[in-house]
Length: 201
Image 1 (cartoon, helix red, strand yellow):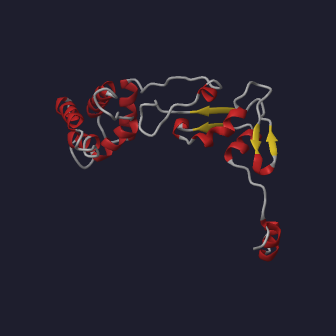
Image 2 (cartoon, helix red, strand yellow):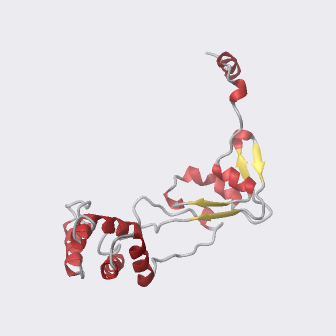
Image 3 (cartoon, one colour):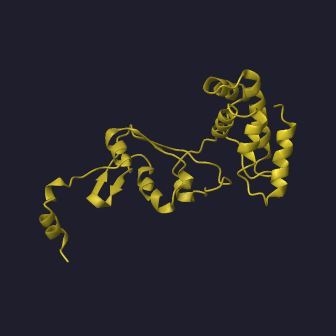
């Protein structure tokens, strides 16, 4: 039943406590670029510190209530965020107040030639295998989310390529795309099965 000061005295730890800034505060103070990755997967309360930082120039601040401190960012500070479309699982839409403070830039998948080059440079797939896999990926992407509930990202392509070191490319694709799906989604499983059977593996 000690107050904080008494507890620190008893523990002999008073002098070991120091102010430590988080990454966002350090970025603001040191004129770094800050990346908020997958912004629309965060809980709403985690987004509150961003509002003041994203005000019009001249009125931007970062409030740190724990230190009773307000930091004005250097003009060179930049805030960048990424987000997935809101129909992706685990995401939600951003509220208007936050969206109104940012510019939204749509970024699509790589062009097929570039994606094929990426696959052959990072995996053991040959040109033809990589080309076939990218063609299959784009057929999946075109069917998402209307026909199937999951898409095929570059990360998924890398997983298939790694599995293809152990199995055939078709088996690796089937394992990546179908084995994790709830088998009660029979229509989707059948749609994926048809796409894999029709692919040029």
